[in-house]
Length: 106
Image 1 (cartoon, helix red, strand yellow):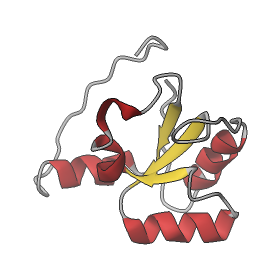
Image 2: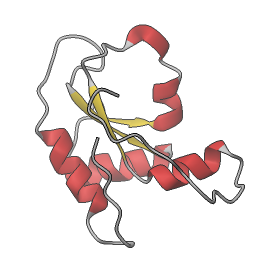
Image 3: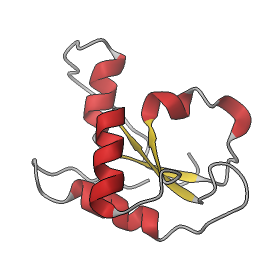
Image 4: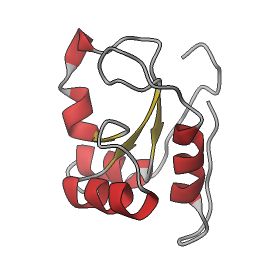
């Protein structure tokens, strides 16, 4: 897993899109081997339009989380603006510390 941390407007989403575009089409849900998870539906639509992606390459984090076991585990994901997603998950409470295990096996 790679962690990309920069200031605002420094190309994080663009790099995420570049990563997604290196994926391959497949014949089972979600129909791509790499997908991008974003914070809400407005952001999903913005990214699809701006970067000319397939709607099957970009998903809202909450929608993806609710798909359950229906997604092939060989599909890999990039999470755009993970800090905002995590903030929403804790109902807006300030997050003081996040720990992560940086291993490919996760």
